[in-house]
Image (cartoon, rainbow, N blue to C red):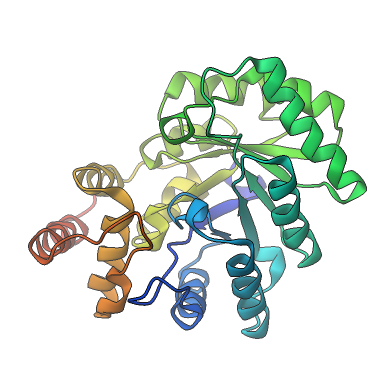
Length: 297
């Protein structure tokens, strides 16, 4: 099981910005290097935890350039592609492929709701057709709590059949074990099934999952190693997830990075998100310190 992992521990990188909301590549590179030094196998840039929908194409380009200059292998990086227009998604994907990234994490078009699955299929198909032979290693991103546009098991199967070799797998952030289990049952032998909810990660790995792209890896990659490598539960992971979930999650993750590093520059958010106030940030940091310090069960 663990010896055959092809993906492993992916860190859903938080994206640092300046007080004025501009991308801070110095902190970004430092954080990416830290994640790799702590045992992360993959860096996912500009996903949900990375506020990906709030960053432009040029920001993605600048970050990938900074990573390359710092010696971070592009084969370690998955680039988040978030767009509602097919052409915008194509440009983001082309950027990832030109940089030789490991792959892309592709959300469905998230503005219109209640979509007919035929229309959703046509959107993905149009994007893949526009990319042509460049299309590869696409991780479909199922996060209906954010997009309100689910990616069904049937749609994964249909796209995989129509575009062989293009769909690498699915990141399931549904926080619904029944959905994760259905994906594992249908695709664990042919696709990379990744889990977004760390509380289900160990169970998924035991049933054929290949790892995760995790926001918690920004904070506690050490505690996540047993889940990913051996499919072994770590109660402190669940406790951290539940504590962070009491706050706006993206600002909470940045607050905990600031807490770990002592660098308050990490508190800044790109609008429309706002940072945690100092009292909540201090309370969250102290509580998470207590959780980490507790002995593993």
